[in-house]
Length: 485
Image (cartoon, rainbow, N blue to C red; front, top):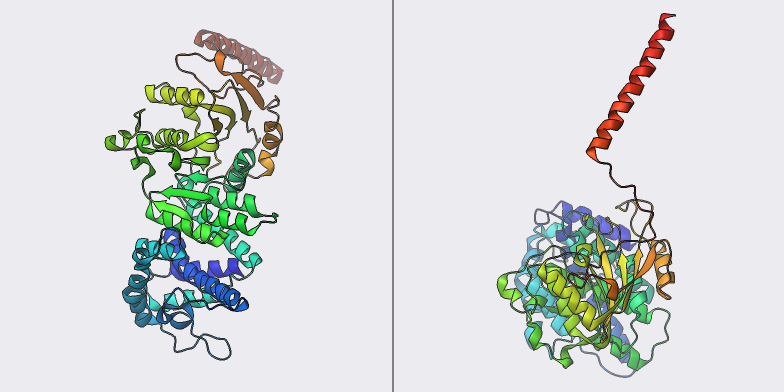
């Protein structure tokens, strides 16, 4: 039901003059979905209050409740044909609903409440659907969706993830918005966070790492009330610079079951590393910072090792913000392991001296849809220098792409071998003491792969060509001789 509804909504938005891309479809579907989700959440809270003899006060004033402006119902349960539509609906949404919802940010008790998130979401978004008739159709479709049971919420979160993936596949933003879930799940299995850990992503994007970490900590577990409260309020933290990514990440976490995500709309790299204190640190970092970005000189001043490379700045930030004994799994371009510029060498030295870089997963190109860049995953623990690093090179024997994406099965051998750091045709260990002290080149060079034959000298190639020409002439002469007979 959810899947077909999403497809129908995309078809409607495709016809609307205000929505021109997959990004617009996701953004506009998101705010309407959120208000329907909020309505169902309030119904659940109202029911729970009644069962305990309490009274529940709804978050929104009556005029702005979903059942009043969006989906007033007749006795038969169908939407009243007198419900607002056309220009009346667009005017209400743009001139009354959005301004009303924005005010919640200022009036909320604190940033960790659902009220604050409502205000922040509607401060960042605007309605782009120009036709009130299209908007009415979309609302009617979304009203048919339910978010009451665990199964319904699970299906909803899964399909919302699919929409985020499609947005990445649509062209730009592939690596920015969507890290393949099999890779995220694998990273989380290796890092293995526990309830009570504080889990942080400073480049949160669509919040895939935080959502999957929530699933890792909850699925199949019998949680106490205290555990549930810890997961809701004191476990997941993120920062995101871009407005749309911030909104999508916040919504994604809410749809996965975290009611008021601790995600802040800010530029992580604008924070001076010297200002990070112990109270600001986390026990776990899970992240895939943007590749290839360039930061201005004033941003670089926040870091002891100056570089314009965004991912290198993020790595410094992650090392600094980890608590002693804290664990991390970070995706970064594979060139970080071998770049010889001063900044890259200095950051490698900092990583290896302050953390135990115990595992490097070397990924093939094509893992990130729309981005041919090769990446590695760095797994490290803060507090002791690195003595030995275990490498695993993922060799799949096929090209990755939209039709053949990365799967969890592809990574099963890595998960198995990583536990004991065993050596195989795809894995090996490197003693850090054996590295060149000048550049600490950590290139993922598999010693178990048969060496390719060395390239021939040009003079040798020319001699071989002459020999082949002579052989060809001799063969042609024999053929001509046979024909003549």
